[in-house]
Amino acid sequence: MLTIIFFLSSGLFLGWSLGANDAANIFGTAVGTKMIKFKTAALICSIFIILGAVVSGAGASHTLGELGAVNQLAGAFIVALAAAVTVMWMTKAGLPVSTSQAIVGAIIGWNFFSHTATSMSSLSKIVGTWVFSPILSALFAFLFFHITKRIVERSKIHLLRLDSYTRIGLLVVGAFGSYSLGANNIGNVMGVFINSSPFKDITLAGLLHLSSIQQLFLLGGIAIAFGVFTYSKKVMMTVGSGIFKLSPVTALVVVLASSITLFLFASQGLHDLLTSLHLPAFPLVPVSSSQAVVGSVMGISLAKGGRNINYKKLSQISMGWVATPLASAILAYVALFFMQNVFMQSVFK
Amino acid sequence: MPKFFNSKSKQLEGDIDGFLDRVTTAGLIFQEGVKAYVKGKKDKFEKNFKDITDLESDADNIRRDIKHKLYTYMLIPESRGDVLGLLETLDDIVDICEKVLEQFSIETPEIPEFLKSDFIELAELSSKAVEEVVKGARAFFREIGMVSDYVNKVHFYEHEADDVEEHLKRRAFNSDEIKRFSHKVHMRYFAEKIAAVSDVAESVAERLSVYAIKRRI
Image (cartoon, rainbow over all chains, first blue to last red; front, top):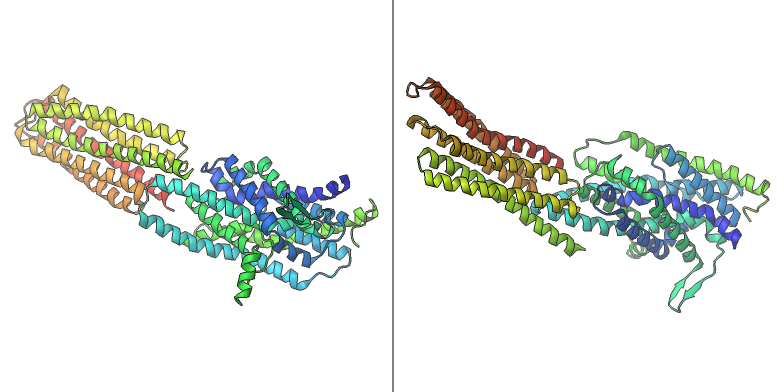
């Protein structure tokens, strides 16, 4: 049991850092501008991240599994650790880092190490989605910004009432965003452990059935929630008053646009519905919530006439598409070598 | 929770509207007070002076209450500073209206016949500027796009008031009808005091246009 907990710890650490960083993408402005109390935000965020992870987490995780099925617990430990260290290192360097990109790089590192062929179709699907997701977010934000602006201007709503509606909106959209984040990003945290999951399916009180994967996701969700409660306040205060100075109403638009993007790339139900209607479905891929948010902010800048577009941030994002997976792949490869040859642990079958 | 937010918001909306109503009323009482004084209706003037004194303390209380509620209920954190700044400067208008009538009451300036119409016109223009700035403040809360229209009107009336003030002062100092120099200075003093109401309205309008830019989505 202790061994299992030890090997899962890197995934849990990755979950913790995801919670610490990405909760700010959803509730950052709301908390930073004091529209919502941190405790309320953290509670809602945690509940809905766990719900999203357990209920809808499977889709995006499956795609990661297609990319590389890490089949030994020690190997999964290293893959998650390499991703976590990369995320930590890139965060320290002040880059808009993505856990998705780090974990994909680490899985490719494992593929190289274990001489497993990397599925190019999965890889291109994933990378294509990374590029597409901020653009989609920008489009949504552009559209929602114009709609919101028109509604606010036409309704002649009082500043105070607008304020209370915005708070409610930030809570509701924040809950939706947290659910989408949990659904979309749990694969990054726990996906690599699926094939070596130590859990068995259980049924609680004859009512609630939890598969071994759902138990993994629940554990990951709790780790994310722990990250939200212990460390995200600091990040939220920076987001709310630092990099992106957004008004509460524009923050609402940004969070809504980003959340929908995350949801589209995570919802199995929507995927099935679109497929059954013979429509092109969104691939279920873990994307970066930070980059979706940057995309949304750019969308709003465009809607305001293209002023204040942060080209540096844009170039950092595109750099991240290459640099993050590369760094994490190299790190995973080296660490797997040490795990296998120094600690004498089998890292693949 | 939504009910909680809404009831507090509605209550405050009412308070703010009530405060703005008092500022408009202060402008009108001020105008009527100056008219009554100039026309020699002493009783009516004293009633106006009493009314504006009551109104001033009433407006102060409402403003303090709004400030207290905004902080206690953590409402509009983003625009709270601007809203309070706006209400405070609007309160300055009420204060100055009351002060001018008080000066009339204490100093009882002797207004010569040929300057009466100028004094009345000046008070009307100042009162107009107050009326428009209050409309601008209401627009700030509900219809941000309209603020600049009202701000422009305030500028217009303030400019007109400046012209009338200058005209009045020139007439006072060039006149042979007013014998004593001290009397001429007294006329200048009151012309400046009445025009100061429009000046304060203009400075509120300046703030308002900045706040409006900040509040645009």
